[in-house]
Length: 151
Image (cartoon, rainbow, N blue to C red; front, side):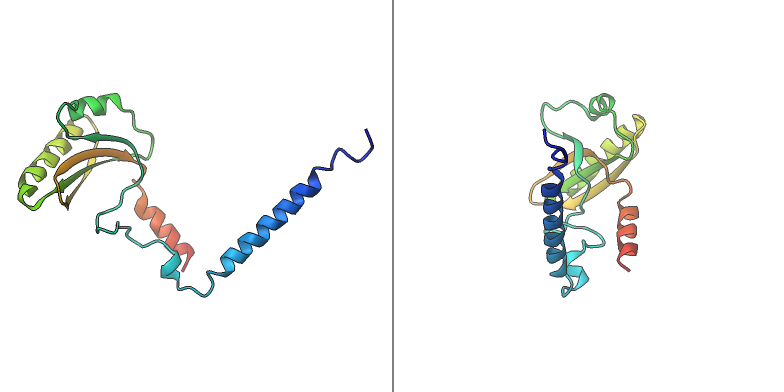
């Protein structure tokens, strides 16, 4: 083995790092002429339909025929720190009272199981009630930090 050849891999790695740096700088320079609202997320994220956004669900339970009761699902699932239980009721106009009542029942079941839930009712084309755990407990904090960073 020739002396000094052991470090030969460092030169290609440095070249690749420099290329990545140049590409990133080029991409970011294209944002300089854009208004902030075109590349920063909205303050209160909503989907195209106007529905309230939640974090990415780590567990979902739907109110469907043959599904286990919510209390069983809550007993079987161990939420991680920072996860929030959200009960979402999607209702067709004629089903609003029934869906509201069902989401309130689920919120009471969750409370009895020791889990506080956020309840969201939203109009939709069809009716459905779901419960989900997601890491969205501190979304307002995250948004405020993002906005402060760009002020």
